[in-house]
Length: 194
Image (cartoon, rainbow, N blue to C red; front, side, top):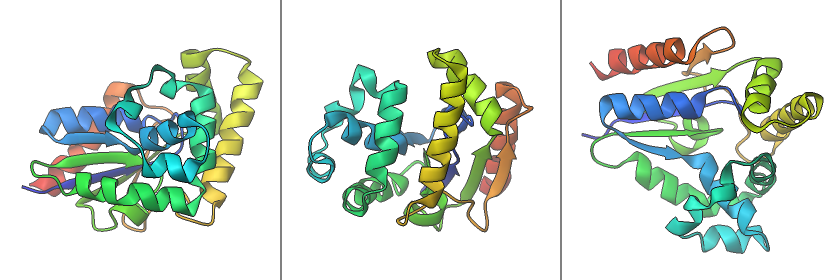
């Protein structure tokens, strides 16, 4: 059975947590596509060459969840040649037997426009900055500014900008617990899968 779930949204909205939980609930494979871009950014050097030579072990680096890696990911994701190098990998994963959940910024609009389910997980910039600050520490005002700047960069890039797919269901997690957000997402997927 091939069943694809596309989950998009801005940083720290909860899409990664929700995606992992949905994949585990249904026994689907999970791909955090952002980790591909984080790995390319973390490799340094020429980002196009880094994307073309990305190895599975590059996805297991300990530094991929840092704020710096997230910012680097956003910068390299704006390069069309980097995106092109990673598209085939993502599309192959989406069509894997047994179902797949992919999360990122352009899954429902570019990578898997025909996904069986599309969710756009979001929250206010302030809520997302609070979450990121709680996770990574640092200066809250700086974290908030970086969240807003990243949103602008991700939504404003010429190639595959972050946006809500026309047929996506928007899930605002600003006032939801993790359990409530996961429950709502599972309910949406279960309804489409039935």
